[in-house]
Image (cartoon, rainbow, N blue to C red; front, side, top):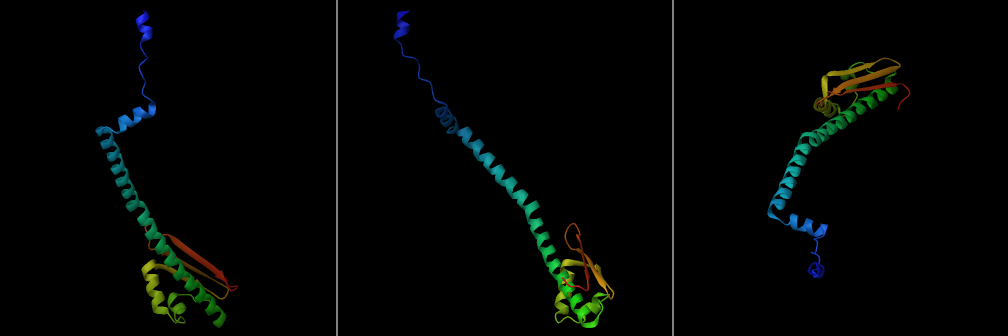
Amino acid sequence: MIGLMDEAPAKQESTLGALRRVMSSKPAMIAALSVSLLSLAYGAFVWKTYFVPQKTAAEVRYRSHNALMRLYDLQLSRHKAQGAFANDLDTLLAGAPDAEKLREELKATTDINTLAVIGDAEKFRLEANVLDSERTLVKFRGTAGGR
C-alpha cells in the first residue's frame, strides 16, 4: 500500500486540449469542410430562389408605381387645365409631352389590359395589375384637391 502513495496521479487532459486534439483529426476536418460546403450551397439556393425574385419584383413594382404616379400628375394637370379628369388612357396621354415613353413604361411594368383610368368632374381612379408574380393590384384615387 505504501507503493501506491508514492505514484503521482495521472495527468488529466483539459477540455480545451481534448477539443483541439479531436478537431485536428482528419475525420473532423472533413466533417467541418462538408458542413461548410453544404451551408454555402444552401445559402446560394436561398439567394437564387428567394432574394433575387424579390428584388426583381420590387424593381417592377417601383417602376410601375412611378409610371402610375405620372398618370396621377397628368390627371391633376388635366383637371386644372380643362376642369375635368380624363376617362381613358388615350385622352389622358394626349396632353403628355412624353406620352410614348410613358406608354412603353406602362406596358413594361403593368398589365395594360387591366389598366383602368376612370374620371369625372370631381374625382378619378387609376387601377392596374403590376407585372410581378403576384399580379399586385395598385389603386390610386384622387380628387380635384391635388396631392
